Length: 221
Image (cartoon, rainbow, N blue to C red; front, side):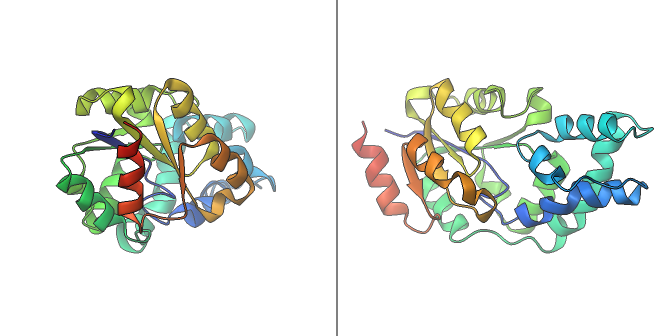
């Protein structure tokens, strides 16, 4: 059964991962530092605050963690506000969840400024009953805090709440905490597709087939 849905944003709702691939490197270069070639891989499963802490310490930046975070946000903000597209059929999928009286939450590693800029422009923000960032939860998706806080706000239970993720480390965290999980394909996670298929309760290439998803989750009751 399902009465709550918790969505990741980047790579699930919006096609923003290509922007993030170079964000850390662009920020470091703008501050006179040469980024290591595997920087994106290092930052991939970190929250914004953990990534900022890593760059500050690894590159000896004379900044606070908050200043590093703001610098990276400034690099990507224009894209969220002006150009990042929604992924296929997202609005229709969210609308159908609402028609079924399913509560919807957002749990994201991105900054609130970015989520509001991107989702407002794409007319998606109004579908969410609540939005929670990892910064607000106090820890990244290596721990389930952001999902648990989102679930608490929408008033659902683990047994009836489904988490939608494209990143394996995040989906694994949600699954381990007791959530039902939906894995979504994103090109940024090509190397983890088999792990996602094995770990998730259901694997989807995209959000175009609501009926198949809904039949599956209601059959589980």
